Length: 222
Ligand SMILES: C[S@@+](CC[C@H](N)C(=O)[O-])C[C@H]1O[C@@H](n2cnc3c(N)ncnc32)[C@H](O)[C@@H]1O
Image (cartoon, rainbow, N blue to C red; front, side, top):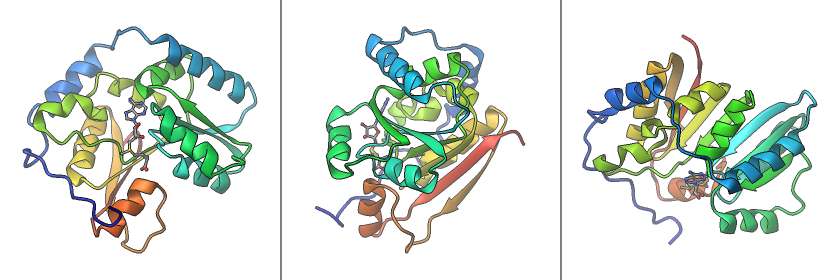
């Protein structure tokens, strides 16, 4: 029920003890799993849409119902916004709810771990990259499912740009911060104000449930 969302609980009390070793291993050994054909097709469509014009690019990874992607496209009309999500169902809801979509927005069904690799290989360097309320995978055993514990993490670093992550689980962002620091990034972790305007549906739901919300902003370099 709306306004009744439970806070994240975990069997972890602090940053995962295997985080540093996991991130260092991934940084040292590029991930070589094959990229799925449907991610190749999604990237080809995105590359065609982005074209060769020198637009600033914003990527909203795991955009869900697209609310943040639409807001970003309206806030930055000079930029191109790509909203990526693996759920066609959620993206279809976005297309219906926000029709007509802004001209500078493309919503695409894809797995970010494949799409990011193709984007990095093609030399893409987004201006801004948003990962808003990623699935927390709060069990200790699930570290590798969190973006910073995933083998694709070095590619996220390679893509660069200003990265913004938000979560209702501060530990997720503390870990992301530590992982980014291992990749040479600097970052800031702050609490979102209670009365801020929600950027996403999950953010609205968590805020209505009285949960504390967190924002990590990060960029390459010290
Ligand atoms: C908790 S929801 C947050 C959605 C939205 N950002 C929001 O805040 O309302 C996480 C989203 O990430 C998407 N997702 C998870 N793993 C993904 C992946 N590997 N590639 C693309 N999307 C993914 C899910 O389908 C889901 O829509």
